[in-house]
Image (tube, rainbow, N blue to C red; front, side, top):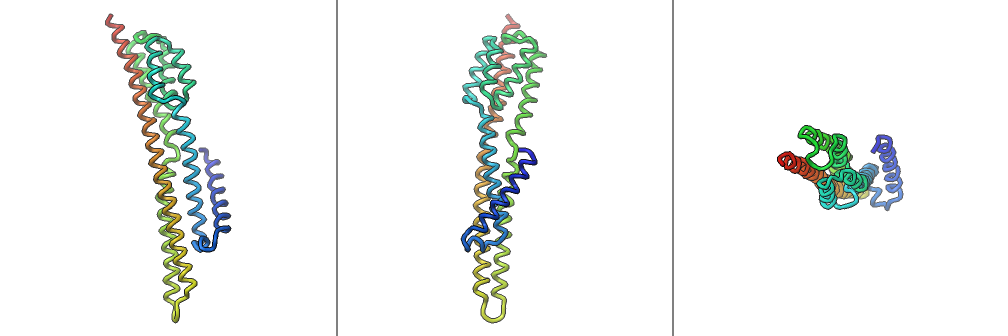
Length: 244
């Protein structure tokens, strides 16, 4: 997500939050202008979650990673490197990008059936696999730190609204004579509404962060396993071919 897009989303979230706050029932508006920021945080969390869902869905590829990797290894064993590369382009996603980069280097080195490239060439393929995987990981983890930050800051923002509301309530109680019931109720309402919004945003953002982190870990594991198994095919059958 580019910086200009982020800025537009933040401004739009603030404007929409302000409009919702102005049109909300009276007991919601009593939460004070701080609710505008709280609502904006909630909208940002939802926007980031949608962005990550689309990105990770694309990164997962079209077919199941295990079936794709198994079919790819079978084609490499048969020496059909071009067919394996075509499968990578059709599959899409992080695993296909990593294995496809390794196979492209393997083909440039003259690789056909396993065993046709020397050990130094296999080491070169291993380096390409490792570097491509390292480039894929930041794309998978993009904006997850922002989602985690929103969960933490939303809690603090709710606590700040609670504190301001309680200050208003105690100020009403501290006046000489009968307490100002209106100000007392307004302060308590402000405290509770801000607390509720902060907790809702924090809970939602934390659950989404954990969900997407689990998905990213699964994708990284599939890239590591797929790279290892591909290298095993190249090295194992290569050694067998050398020994015959």
